[in-house]
Image (cartoon, rainbow, N blue to C red; front, side, top):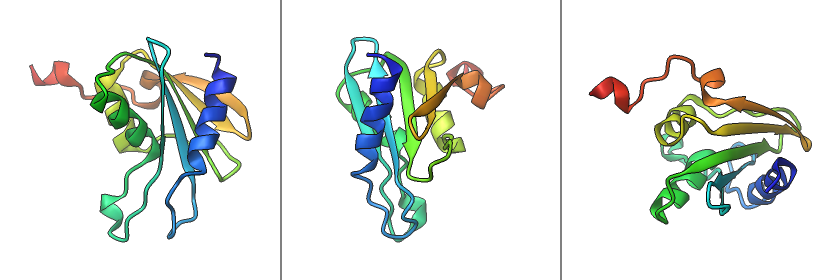
Length: 129
């Protein structure tokens, strides 16, 4: 799947966001090495600490279905600007894929980063051993 199509899937996912408080919709589309796409949206809860981001929703859906090899994740928002993953999402991304392309879109234009660009000197399972 090309990145333009992955970005489109992320925008479709953003439409499913549950954001009664912020009104800030975020969508993510995660591409696996097998070619399957898992989407996610942000889900807000009145207790904001329990809120889940779109990126983590997509990754957790994939993991729960037995997928562990990811090639790219597209992230979009309703802000009409580039929206980067939060710190927690960056940590989750690096946990499951050190070589993933992170596609950040602004109104269908996009930039591609590696996780090391967004989370240099990350703490991973290697540091625990």
